[in-house]
Amino acid sequence: MPRSDHPLLPFLITLAGVGMLSLMDAFMKGASLAIGAYSAAVLRSSLGLLLIAPVWLAGGGKWPQPHVLRLHLLRGTSSTFMALSFFYALTKLPIAEAIAISFIAPLIALYLAAILLGETVSRRAIWASVLGFAGTIVIIGGKIGSESPNNDLWLGLAAIIFSALLYAWNFILIRQQSQVALPREVATFHSGVSAVILGLAAPWFFVLPSTDVMIAVGWSALLTVGGAMALAWAYARAEAQALVPIEYSGFLWASLFGWLFFREAVTMPTIAGTVLIVIGCWIAARAPTEQSTI
Image (tube, rainbow, N blue to C red; front, side):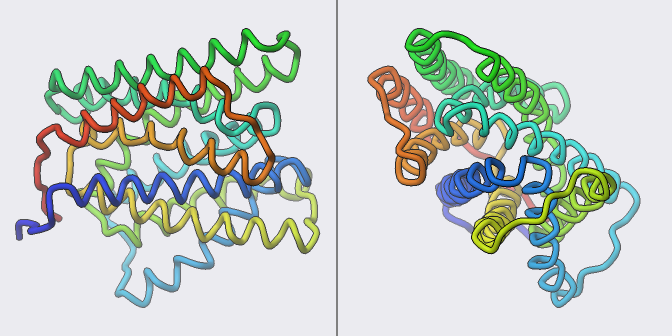
């Protein structure tokens, strides 16, 4: 049955989803600095599963068909290592800079969508991605030019680039998942697969958190579930190439939360890059979208 949603609604929901995940990053940075990226990631996934699994089951959730389960396993596995490397990068880099560098993912995903999903990449979507990417280059250039490179910087850069490559693939998997599963099922398996994979190493690497850290991770889990469901809902109703540039708005959220939580300064290159990113998002929002059904 065709959807009757307002054509801009997927963009607004995507914006909200990105905001929730950016706030989650702020909570997870604090937790990762306290107990390590691995322990924080294990707790987030486990709590996320406890939150969303009852919702999925109460809504009549059933074990997925093999081809759907394969998608859940693929995304859950790639998301596990994507998140782990990203949270590690947050312990080495400011949130805004880490988010900015990760914006190479939407650029890559734009063309993966054409290869793997058969989507036609419009000129408008290409210009949107180019502007967004140009904004990140301005920001990164300002960052590297303002301080001397050290081991932490290079480790952080390596981790965020690896995470971004996996993130690009995740965009495609989200689009494929959203066509065959409801958001609550997508969110359940997203957290569940990650909890199982990370839990395998718990006897050797897990560190018990303090109460404050546990509360922060709890908020992270709640925001992860909310963000995952929001993105799954939006990607079921618009093409990946149209929604992907909205990810660039994550820098705006990251700048805000980085300042609020860690007093991370916003520099002039950051402001200049942000302007380009916002323009790219505006262009993407004006691109024609395609309604989908589930």
